[in-house]
Image (cartoon, rainbow, N blue to C red; front, top):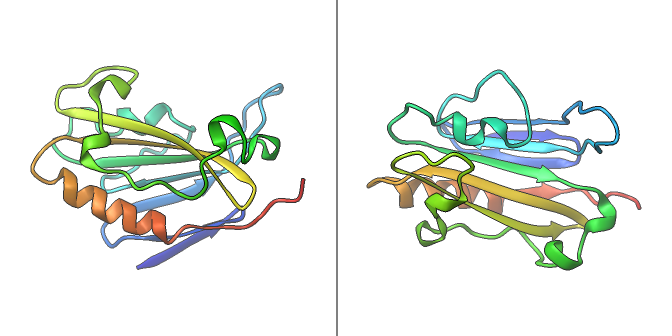
Length: 153
């Protein structure tokens, strides 16, 4: 396994998967916080928080793409971000209505949570086929390895 670490995040990238950590460069008033992408398909060169998540699978048979997007620390631990710890994603959580643009045989899920006083959105898009549960097991194992460095408020 390869360890990917940057910007206060660290994760074990499963063999055969791709991963990256970056901070978007959006103009003000946007706030730019770290984003982690994991996929069992090649990631596109373009880097954005969510845009390529579903598009990465477009035209493919099979695959899973995950975006873990950070938000402003003052949002941590309350409201939408009150749940603590990285959630596990199961096949039953996936819903085709969670996709911005519906695609046959794909479904997604989005969850919000906090870790170490840092708020996150986890967005997963997966092909729905015989291998979905296996892909999600691998993703959940990778996300269980996620280490988050606390940010000073």
